[in-house]
Length: 425
Picture 1 (cartoon, rainbow, N blue to C red):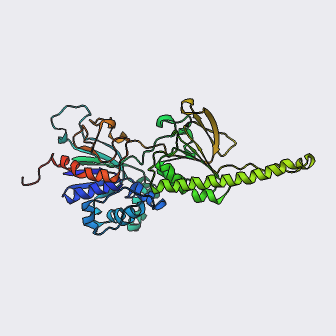
Picture 2 (picture 1 turned 90 degrees about the horizontal axis):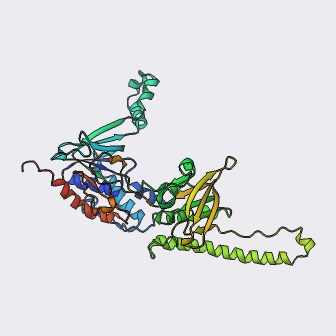
Picture 3 (picture 1 turned 90 degrees about the vertical axis):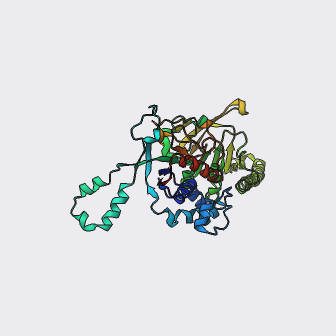
């Protein structure tokens, strides 16, 4: 039995190691470094509490792994050593999967046994990296070739490999939604994407030259944005964060007693306290300024009214994005309908937009398969209508964690093994 696993996160790693332990031929296709979003988040917010779990086969390989209650502990004590274990040698294939289809069968072609036709996994790799490595290993060989020929080898080309079964473990974190109403595109959003970062990529998007940032959404990723920008905000009094969310109470879905929520409340509380103190000082200054004689007041500038460094707009949707030719900023227009409270239409200029309006399942690589793409009807391990095709990970928009995925690996594997008979049986 030969199985292709697509993904680079914890479930992809765990699934690959479990099947390998069961003496199954496995290839793990990974677009990025092993660890996926866990690797990124552990480097940026290691203290983030994590409702996670380790597998029995993972512990067999590593022995005593220590605590795994935070993102940093889970990555450093468990997932990183697991991804670097010698058991992963020969399993991992660096490459982006472009599409998966049957070698010959059409989506609705009727045959008694669709598994009689293998799955074809089409993927691409980074040819430049391969060529550079080969040049270093065989400099004399490449000296005989012309530069034009070597450059032609760097062109991206498609490869394929055939498998009995395929397991999609990509999850949803790498497929964030746009910032318009209902997860759709706001007007002009696609045309100005160089100013906009989506999902976890936004955690490193803000630079020293940026002074104003708009965050769209108020889930866990948005909270991470806020906390990651805490030091950036404190460096200059002129810096601003504006948060726009369609929730009528921002961050209402965060667990009340989670460390993430407590840290966020502390940050927002500090911002409010600073604004209150600045407002008191401003009131004193404005009163003194008003008490001045008219001829003196005309020569003394009016005190500047303080602004909040963090301002939250609740019950609002971003409707359009605009760029003026003579401005380096982009302008975000958002609106609050009256059924969510007091109506509002506002436009803000900003250097950078960080979008975290949620994530969605990407099924585009499976087009042409005999597969029901209505994931809202799926439960458990997502055994699809195409025999031999599986999803391990979120199959609806509900919350889904690593612990849930681990509990489904054996169930999914039993279904996979039911198609085959071991040698000698």
